[in-house]
Amino acid sequence: MTKVLFLVGSLRKGSFVQQFAKAGEKALEGKAEVSCLDLSTFPLFNQDLETPVLPEIAAARQLVSEADAIWIFSPTYNFAIPGVVKNALDWLSRALDLSDPHNPSILHDKFSTVSILANGGHEQAAAQYRALLPFIRTQFINEVTMTKVNDSAWMDGQFIPTEEVVANLEKQADALLAAIEKGPVATEASW
Image 1 (cartoon, rainbow, N blue to C red):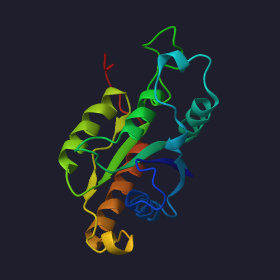
Image 2: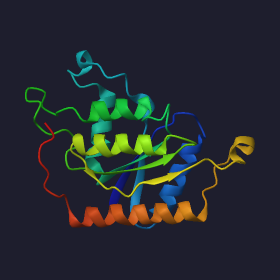
Image 3: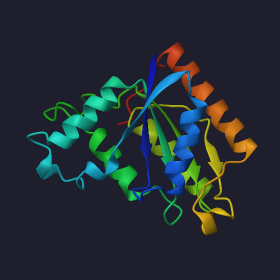
């Protein structure tokens, strides 16, 4: 079965973005196996820490290696990609063989997509992901779901996706799975 690895860009327990990811998991139900990469295990990126490979980075690379795709569920912080997501992508986009920085990373040709939950900055963050994910040589599926937090969530802590959001997540899941089935498209090196 197809394997999709979720990267959830909010570390807060029970966060709205974590609840949003659960809706994404439902969109893949019966179509793909879903797992989640714990972004809290990543140290801040530092080239001094790259060799020898840290156990938490080796474990993360293994999970990415086993997955057919990564699906990022993201808030926006100051109309931008959250630091925990960017930090994880910085680690994962490094060449596996550091003696040649043009060697592939674990993300090379990995399918990727993103869904954004925020009350502002959707387009700005989406534009950053649209630039970053192809640059780090993922096969980016540009079927992005963007939505706001429902008003009642601020009172009861429950994110409730609208029918439109559920339909968009299902469409995004289908686009991702269809791309995986077709296989990678040849791309030029980003640098």
